[in-house]
Image 1 (cartoon, protein in one colour):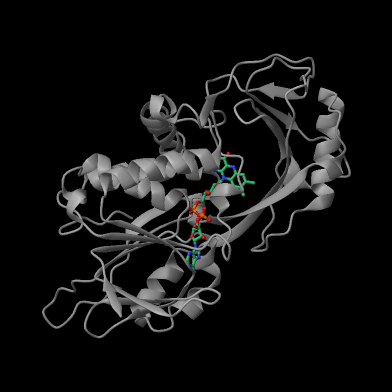
Image 2 (cartoon, rainbow, N blue to C red):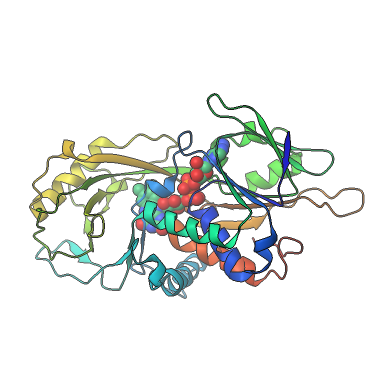
Length: 368
Ligand SMILES: Cc1cc2nc3c(=O)[nH]c(=O)nc-3n(C[C@H](O)[C@H](O)[C@H](O)COP(=O)(O)OP(=O)(O)OC[C@H]3O[C@@H](n4cnc5c(N)ncnc54)[C@H](O)[C@@H]3O)c2cc1C
């Protein structure tokens, strides 16, 4: 049986949730009447949004230097105002404090920043979205194929292990599948028009894996630093390390008593941690902060980020060819390239998108 929806969202990472959250804020009345389906497959495509250090900080970014810097500053300000200081998210977002430690190489975050517990934050966002879009259907299955039909509708076929093939139809598709878009473009879009595929290639998206060490610690553990959430950045000076780990961090999330040490950056699309680099980073922080654990006692996590041209994220409509009437009813939107700032830029771009859109998705403007 073919199921019809007003709007199909692919992906359950921060890109898609930020888009839906901002849609509700911009058009609270019209979203109530729409049927929306949210399709993700975390068992098959692990979200970067759960394998991330998820901080939102103004450190190291300035306005007036580059378009990217301007975007990051605006994104920080927007996140801070709308989410960072919102009581609804206080169980999943912690504010970092200023610290001074006796290590010349350590830089303490000098401005307020936010440390997010990703899974809790996503849960609260999702509950808010569900409360505002009563006709929201959530499906956990991988999308096997996207077919652009001649009758100007998208058809998706889904199917995980043991699942029956299901067909979904809509004229509006919002794609936030993160790295999976990049690696499976040829396969998933083989039935799309060439112009669509060309538009995709122009975005020049790449995958960049990042890994870190983490450990949830018992309540009797006391840090040598104050017992509060913090971030310490450290310049990694060991001659045995490669240039890709020049800046390292230790995070303490008091909220869920989690220590995070990282990160590595590798041009890869594989969920494989860079064990040797992480060992080096771990040993430096262990020495600095008298950590009682050994490397093997922690968990190694890897997330795969998408990086766009000049590190710019994109939330855009991808134009599809017009039909013979000069206007195609099919609308295709994409969020990607969130790279290292997914938790702030996704919200700001979505807000900007809806600010410039009167009655989305019936009428809309394109933002590139
Ligand atoms: C080590 C590391 C540290 C980071 N630190 C920060 C930080 O401090 N601050 C910050 O803001 N950002 C940080 N980031 C970046 C941030 O985590 C990402 O930008 C963000 O999570 C990307 O979100 P996304 O929604 O685009 O993709 P994802 O979270 O990857 O979501 C993709 C979704 O699509 C689904 N999907 C994919 N393919 C299919 C398919 N075929 N069928 C169905 N579903 C599918 C997946 O299951 C998933 O739900 C970090 C990333 C890493 C790796």
